Length: 154
Length: 154
DNA sequence: AATATATAGTCAAATTTGGTCAAAATAAAA
DNA sequence: TTTTATTTTGACCAAATTTGACTATATATT
Image 1 (cartoon, rainbow over the protein chains, first blue to last red):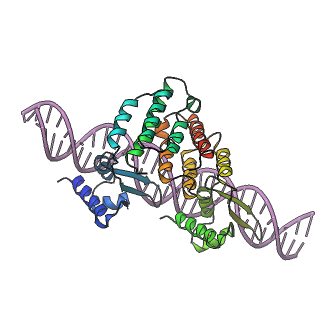
Image 2 (cartoon, rainbow over the protein chains, first blue to last red; image 1 turned 90 degrees about the vertical axis):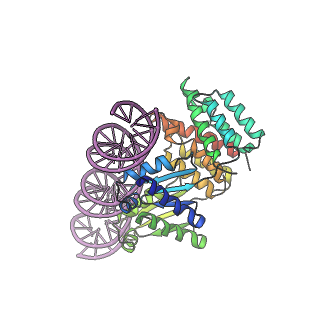
Image 3 (cartoon, chains in turn brown, orange, green, purple; image 1 turned 120 degrees about the vertical axis):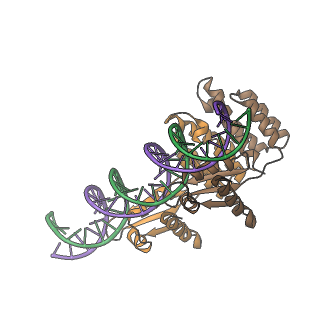
């Protein structure tokens, strides 16, 4: 067992007890506690608390800073969304993107309102950058939105 | 929690109790109360009571001076969205855009899920273009989404 | 009027956090 | 025993907060 494994176990234990969905830590405190350098905490988080493994990481620097780890649930539509994300990268046309949204709405993965919201961001007039950069930007934006859906029940 | 967070909470509490729309404070009194330098109050106001978050700040120097914090009110959802669109154009930072989303979610204009969906599109990593174009692109995207909300009651 | 006093504002340096990246060390696999 | 992957470390970076010197403005006093 490496120190990284021990820190991972420690953090997961806190998360499990009391059914907590979220913990906030101070990086330097954990580092002190396990007598390691602060950046080792980043290493543990980057390798063990990834979004693929179902964790969301947020943090703030400066006085009162913290690292927040939140447990997120896989959704039923996870595989579907994952497949779509693969298809639309690294670039996607406005038409193809719209097709994806309509399909998701028909399958009740997103509401009509969400579809309109998402569609608004994919418009070439809104993005207003030259091709081919525009289709790449659209792919990044749509991927980002679909990724949040992978972990969020309505 | 930093001192700034505590002062923010304190001021918001006063604003909430009694449905007050406005409070007037003496900068030095608050500074004394929380044992900080007076300019820290300016810092709290500049970072936490911004127009994006729906506050108006007025002040007066000299004897009998004060800082007045007003929660801005809107007739209806349509007018609120319109006002926000004006504020965020022609450019908006990621922080200011997030402030707007959090406010809309608190006011139940959007759901938490919609907030996350929208937030995903505003991330600087996702937009991935250089400043200042990025802040302009973000403004266009957010405006487009808010505009669809103007005409889509849930 | 002129001057003194009482407020608030600005700005940048110092401080307090967390982030990144790559080299060095160690462990695991071939 | 090489080669490869993982972990550990530390130097340097970035962001948020805290602090204080200096400035600006309104009111009170002379």
